[in-house]
Image (tube, rainbow, N blue to C red; front, side, top):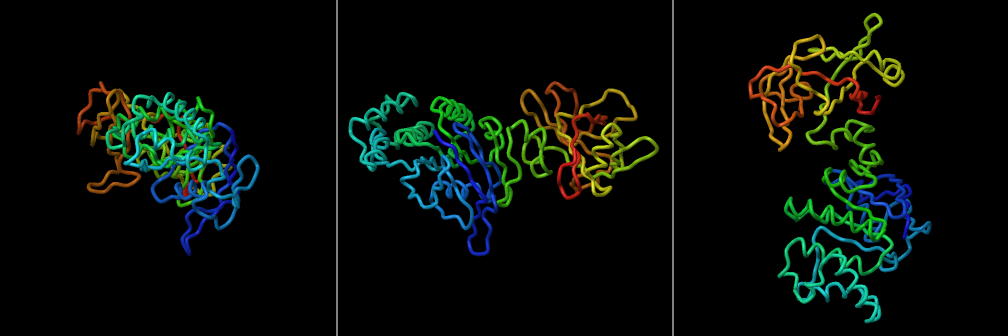
Length: 370
């Protein structure tokens, strides 16, 4: 199929930076997701690859060849948009066949390609219907089919599940990923939904304000985030980020959170080597905080503030000892993920225990230390 190489790519709109100095290699048959919040440059990057925008700097290579001077129709790329852009006056068959007719593909080859796509997507009984008679999921399959019939080297997908209901989104995630594996087409998928990215991707490229923050497998980015933005963007409920100070006392080393001191003596050498000051940020995910049954030196007395049922689990939002009324900051509350059957109520006094072997430590500027 195809490899895609993005080299020092930048795009400016007058004095507005859309993306800045992005370098990224997508392997043959890989499913890579470009993830990030709204306005971070995800769609701009996709449009640059497709040829719908012209870069300010940098290069884009497909199979080792620059495509900057290659017209859109000759890039051998198929794009699926948020809105399906189907022709309402055409039948499903005609919608699928239309891009092939525009490329003057023979009638025999057009029928073959449409047949293969409709069988693959389960559309063979809908060929005579028009888009207005189709469900959202069926329309999405037609949009995918229109990309498949072109038999491109690369699929580009720009938040294609945005307008589907949650149940159908879940179903289509599985279908798109299964389809991509069966076809073996290199795919670049854009979304702001971290759950989609974690479930579907071989690798994730996370953007913030047009700048690439980290590239890696879902597990790598979740378990080894490069900075506090990456750590906070992936995971639901979000990671807890707590201001702290690095303190050495005798042979012991602690993170001092004012209301609690966490012993990190076992990681002293690594932290000392990378830190550039004593003010740090402790990151700990909700699943790495537990409710302790007994009082001890390594537990924190706190109060249940909110309980969020999540089916088989619950997220408990807990006030920390430094909590001040009507003030929410990094030091005020933490998320704790527990089994749904945990017998706690709002207002209960509980004790928290941090799993110190699963913590992250960041510089005050946000870069990862540990």
